[in-house]
Length: 159
Length: 196
Image (cartoon, rainbow over all chains, first blue to last red; front, side):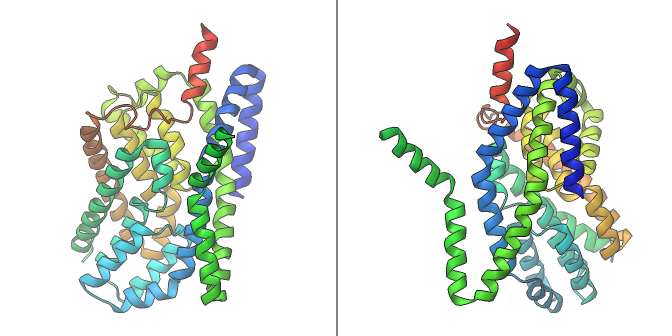
C-alpha cells in the first residue's frame, strides 16, 4: 500500500517533470539509476545480515532475557541489541511493549527503543556511501550517547 | 584483460557483505535448518520493503535535485536559516516516512545543495527516531506519556547532536562530508555544463 503510493507519486511527478523539461527529467533518472546501482550491493548485504540477525535473535529470546533481568545488565544488553540490530518498528514496538509489561524498567525499554532508532550499525555501510565515514561515525556515536541520556531522563521523568 | 580483472575484484569487494551473508546462511542451514529458513524469510520481507521504498525515493531525490534551485535550499535550511531552518528540518524529519536508509541519499543531496550540517543531522536523527508513524505505534504499545516524553527528548537530542557534529565538521574536507560521493554530483556537473 505504502509502496503503491510512493510509486504512483514518483510516476506522476516524473510525468509532470517530463512534460515541462525532458532534459532535466532524463538527468534526474540517470542520477537515480546510477545511485541505485551504486548502493545496491551494500543494500543487498544489509538485507542478508538483517535476516540473519532476526533469525538468530528471536523476539521471544529478547523478551525473556530483558523482561526478567532487572537492573543494569538488562539495560546494557538492551542498548547493545538496539544499536547493533535493525528491527522494523512493526516488530520492535510490540516487543518493547511486552518487555515493559513483563516488568522491565523504563530505563531498559527506553534504551532499547532509542538505540534501535538512533544508532544503526547495520545501516552504517550505506550511510558511509552517502555521507562519508566521519559523519557516520560522529552521528552514530553521539546517537548512542544521547540514546542513553534519553533513557536515563525518561526513567527519572516517568518514575 | 587487466581492467576486467580489476572490475571483478571491485565487484567482489562491493558484494562482500552479500557473500558473507550467503555463507553465514549456509552454515546456519547446516546447524539449524529452521533458523536458516527463518533468516531467508526475514531477508525476503526486508528486501520487499526495500524495493517498495528505494527506487521511488531515488527518483524523488533526482527530481528535487533537478528542479529545486540551490537558493531555495540555502534560504530554508542553509547556513543563515537559524531557528527557522532547524524547525523545518525537524518537521521534515518527523513527516518523512520510510526506513532511515532511504533518507541518506536525500540528506546527501541537500548537503550538496547548501543545507547546513546541523540541520541535516537533526533531520536524520528525528527521521530515524521520531517519525510520526513510529510515535503513533509507540503510543499504542507503550502509552502516550512514554511516547511523547521520548519524542520531546529526541527533538532536543537531535538539535544537540546536529550542533556537535557541525562543530566537529568545521575542519573536515568536502570528501569527509561525503560530498564528493554525493549521488547527484555528476548530474549537477552535467547540468552546469549544459547551461553554459
